[in-house]
Image (cartoon, rainbow, N blue to C red):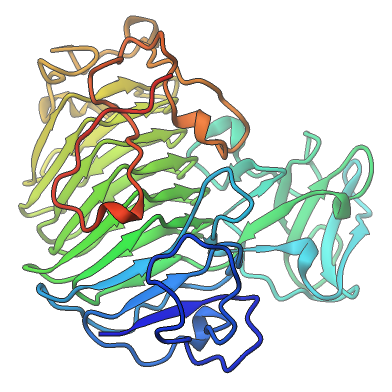
Length: 429
């Protein structure tokens, strides 16, 4: 078992700096001989640790986790996300367009104040971006009506964007409307890879992940039955479809997640199989739905405790008819907007599968055909900033009706060790 490091600022031997620092360290000091990118990560073994050094990145690469751990010796990834801090490590499936070599915006011949993206005036060879942000304002191709990307040539909103070819370029690219200044003045990040993490390797633990911009989802677990993935304190944001798209029968433990604008669902499972999913504590804001249990599921379990789902356009849950999964939930707070067609706590008529909230939910023992947010209970977050990129966007006011309920995001650092059932007091103050 060895301790390795990744640091994009490193200039040394690029050998993983095995043993050069303390595994999981939150120091932002450069580790000179660390691997300089995810692609540089070499051969690993069960029980190894990989620490991403604070202050490094962002990493615009998919996370390749290489191989299996074992039940006795899981592989541990200390990812050192630190939301709201300049030294937090971000791994994203999106690219910063203005940081690309040769980035150039050209005024379009159509539309109003529209520009299209090129590399040195030519084809930037982008993948179709299904989702992205401009100055942290999220848009996607579907799911959230007010935040859908628009059509080149008819972009109606300042800083809104679209995908296409409205200038007979011979290729499609990003178009954006900018009424004052230029696109080069903006922070423009567009999804370019389907997932940050997509793997069927077994027995991994991920601490403090900050994963963003999945062109499909941020994470797709596909590990086997009898094995596990644990996520401790993940932040998942700006995906097209899901924060987590479960596609394997291994146990997926998610402790203290925070989610922002994760597209259609924060967490979903819909495949011909049997998921084993546990979510304890956490907050999700802005996805179309918090959860989906799809009709293809042939069994398995989906358990949620101490969670807050808020500002969801469609509802809290879509528990589709035909799904054979067992759903268990309690001590959660549901506060969706439900303004979409068929919006309700149990979206699209799925109240047959989930007829009432738990007796200890907020609201308690409530009919899930409910479609009026005014009849629910506001959890009262301290702040709501664009993109939900401040820690206070997930912290509750002292006046919150959830005070003392152990509902919401719980502050646990990586030093807390492997997950085994973390339940505590949410951040309230």
